[in-house]
Amino acid sequence: MITATAVLAIIFLAIQAANYFYARSIALAAAQEAVNAQRAYNAAPGAGQAQASAFIASTGDSLSEVTITVTSDGRNVQATVDGRCLSILPGFCAMVGVHATVHGTVERVTSP
Image: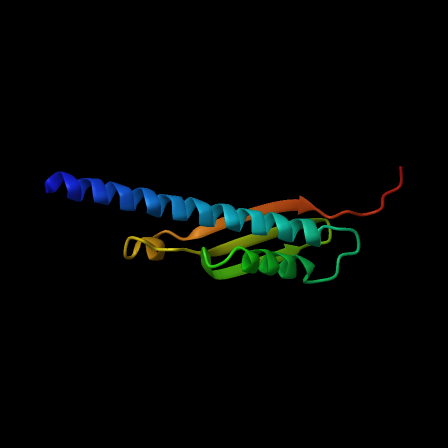
């Protein structure tokens, strides 16, 4: 009986770890999508935010309570995605949030 409990605990830990890393990969991909959209030549303000939101919506509910921040100073773009993973173990995702940040350079015309 004690062995079965230990095995179940290990299985639940493994599932929780998989959920966390999957949510983290979604956040990183969304941040990359945001930077790629916002760094395009003559990109409209908010293009990165919209692209990241669309990407996260297409992935289902593996990443929740999402906050997307895209900033640009005219030369560089930074996108940050914060959120929570699905929780199998009570309180895990409340303690350990998901965070991803990506940087990129804005495309612009330069003289040779």
